[in-house]
Picture 1 (cartoon, rainbow, N blue to C red):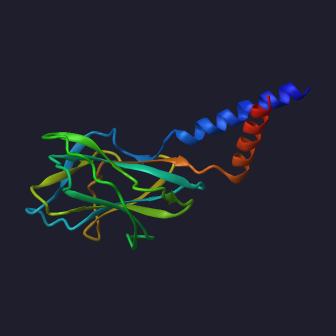
Picture 2 (picture 1 turned 180 degrees about the vertical axis):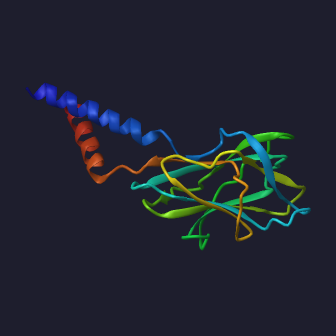
Length: 194
């Protein structure tokens, strides 16, 4: 009778461990059709553009923010995460810069430099600004609002509402609940004893 319980706990532990390592799409519209774009750089009046979203009833570790950019070169953008209801208020994290891929439109991954938790039921903003290092580049706009586990809030251009739905995705891993970690440890202990 002890063997089936040990196996069940071992299987549960493996299932929980598998969930902890795969990234979930928190919110995205990266698969939508390109319509237009927001211009950044020396020939632009764009100071910043921000995309807001409210987290679901669960904490997530942030893995990356992906932006669909056109004519982007390494170091031309500064991407950060802000909090704030209605508008970005506090800068929380600056993401690692993506490497340019040459002429054309590509998805660029801006990664978290350290573990960062997106808290449940909190509104965050993906804040995009140019560094002014070189030429112009574009953050593409698409024909669909972002959706996913989180809910879309708004787009802001230089602080004003924007009808350009820029293409982005936020990806992360669910923060395990305290009971999940205990079961994982118990399952590992039982498996070790065998």
